[in-house]
Length: 198
Image (cartoon, rainbow, N blue to C red; front, side):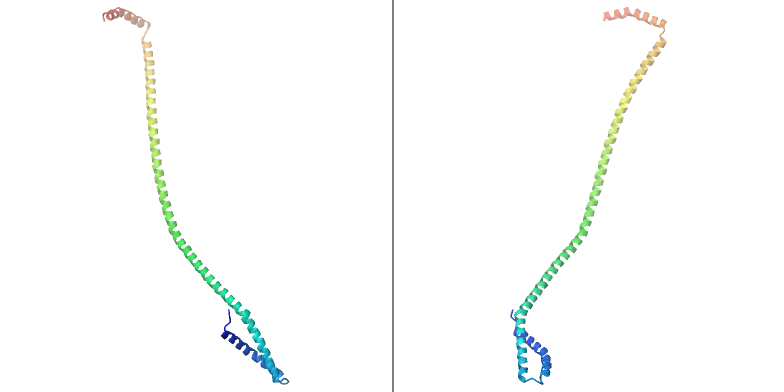
């Protein structure tokens, strides 16, 4: 990048203004014993030194400053882009946080509905199991009742037979036994005749 004439002239002018008082002091010290030619040579020497400095500044300083300025501009643009990206991310995070509250509320409501549905299913299953158990118990009780009644009838019949045997044995004496046998034997021919006539 070339240094324009106007800034170069400003630099030369500023250097002359800065160097003029110093040269004036030097001139006063040497004015007593020196000629005007020495003064001109001092100014020429100053001009050569200043021109060399100006050339160095123009040759190396301008590109350095231009490169430094470009780097600063790039850094500013990069920082602006990063800020823009960070602002976008921040806005996205804020949006997600806002959505998170709504999502949490939705999840809570959904889980509450699922809990209620699960409670209802458990209550229905429990009621069905209780009904099955109750029916099973009723069937077992009915079956046990039938078995107990049948066993009771059988036991009552056995008791009745034993009681009848006991009563019969207590009533039948040897005389009564003989009379029954005689009556039975007497009735045999009558029964035999009836059987033959049939």
